[in-house]
Length: 404
Image 1 (tube, rainbow, N blue to C red):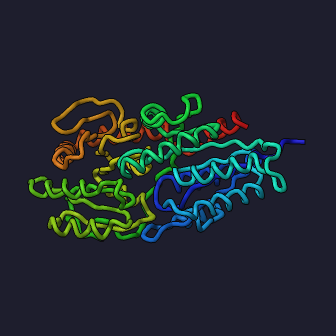
Image 2: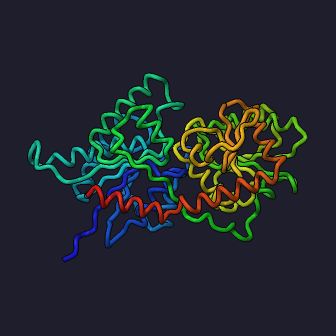
Image 3: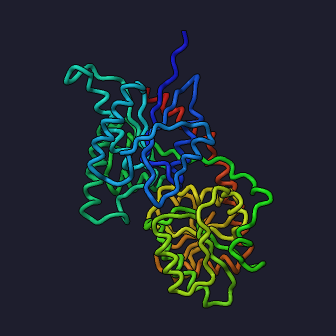
């Protein structure tokens, strides 16, 4: 009689717009019988964020939604632990795999209780459930004040003690989390890069981004795609756009996405009188957006490995980004150091948060079509070789087989 499928319960705080939501949906949809049975548990999406439940539905995934499992810390977290614990008792998983900080704390706590608590007794015979956590990014700098950050680091150090494997998505992230912040033991860690589906072709017949926001024909488009939140540091992009407007190099900036900062960012753009910036809102057809960009811009203060940057690279769009987290690994070795920025193998990186340095990097790309083409070709080849969903599924399959 063949072995039953390994039961995987995957937990994420919310299916909002971003890489982690797509990551967990892809894995849940592809790790299926006969080898696996996968269940996805997700929390609620906060007001002001776009819900990506539609993406789960498109991929045939029906998550278990828990209203209390939201992003912000609250007394509801205790309810979340109890509810997740109940689901684990019902589902009887071999592996509980958590994604992102909030779900990691709630899910691993519930899994620890599930391992040792048996109904009717205080402590029963331990169940053989394994706990795995993926850091898609981290909150150990640029999110909160020093005191709150220290609390989060302490919590993660404690949670690491009850976790069999910790996954990071880049070498740079490994050095930060295991090295700088001393979370877990090195032997617990595995570096498993993200994977993406093919970006695909633009939708036919739809109105183009250039037409929609009235960008003059021939004017290059520099774009950002993602959530409009503090960590994305879009004020830096606006300030650099203001500096670019004072030059004779044409460029129009498009910010694609939504979030609670949209209103304040639009007001800031109005204060700066930025006629060269447009806000395009959320778009489901990312392939069409990327097809129109001449440059992809990322200005984050902190990143794990940005899926938006990987998708831009896959779509042959040259990238300029702040040199944070896994961006450094995506960009590759530095080839040339310029005034205010660096030209790496596959992207241009800015080491500061000075808008003047970002402007210098942007103008360099805008003036050098050959450089843009070279970076784009190298980046697309790199992503094709290293960041496919099939490779991601293979890596996770090997990891799961090793821990069960």
